[in-house]
Image (tube, rainbow, N blue to C red; front, side, top):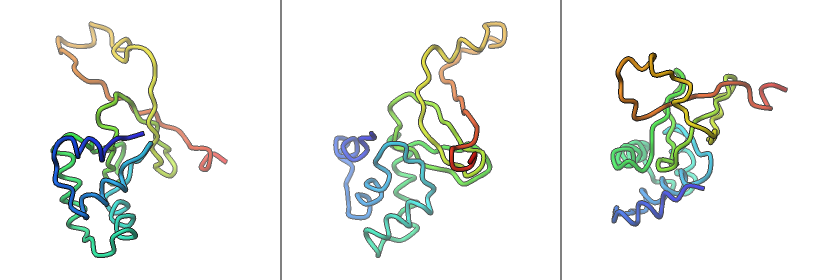
Length: 137
């Protein structure tokens, strides 16, 4: 489970009621919501929250490195609070559902040294694609 609220508190980030509700909406396991989805859920908890406030808050959380933007296709960016635990994404090609996955082994093992072209690789981003049970059924 994400510990987004705790991480923001530890950083001393001022948690206004608007910021807190955005963090609460994002905080959880496998949360990969679009900004519009965050706004809809936040507005259900705090009706006066504006779309601009949600977008600004998400931008601040990304700048702090506490939330990452996930772009797995041509759909809207999604926001992932699981910013500090290495993981990859499993994406449904039908509905766009995203799940965090934690494959074992060295992700660089699939890239032979001859295919690195002298790069010092610092990060690997793998996206697994398929159909979720709902779309496959």
